[in-house]
Length: 227
Ligand code: ADE
Image (cartoon, rainbow, N blue to C red; front, side, top):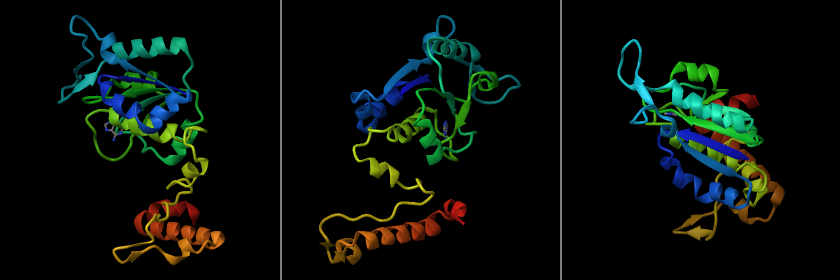
């Protein structure tokens, strides 16, 4: 997979992209990430990328020219499966979107800033809009890092233990069951007996029960699709 990210602050993405899963995927040759500075195609002496909004109102808006120029240049070099705009006024990202994006070849992610981008960019260039939750971040960079992490870990062979990604929370619209490790007894707190029983079938059933119990308690909205 190749991911291109367009941003006014690409350095915000450098650390998350160069550690952990995202780094491992690049080291294994399964992922290429290219960060692009929007200002490189900014206007005039000061590489301007934003401007006041028509009609008045607080906050600057990212202008058409640098973003059209960047996206048109990148599109002339390869086909993008999706051109994604990170913004809080969009449908909220979920595991099923992460699954389907993990099957793509080329993704282009545009990070918003300030008050957002000129609407013409959204209408003409963007094929998918993603919010990572109902709160407003300063820019789309951290949100883009979240999406990249969730997607890239699902690319086959990125995570060593294939089953571990499949049993994550949300893969079946269920939260994950509780997990324990050694010691089996700590400060008088013990691990549920069943996990030490060696009875795989009983353990699997216990985990499923706990996953359902947790989901109903913490995220009853997720459980709905199982009814
Ligand atoms: N940019 C600012 N806030 C955001 C959010 N919640 N999701 C995606 N991009 C954003």
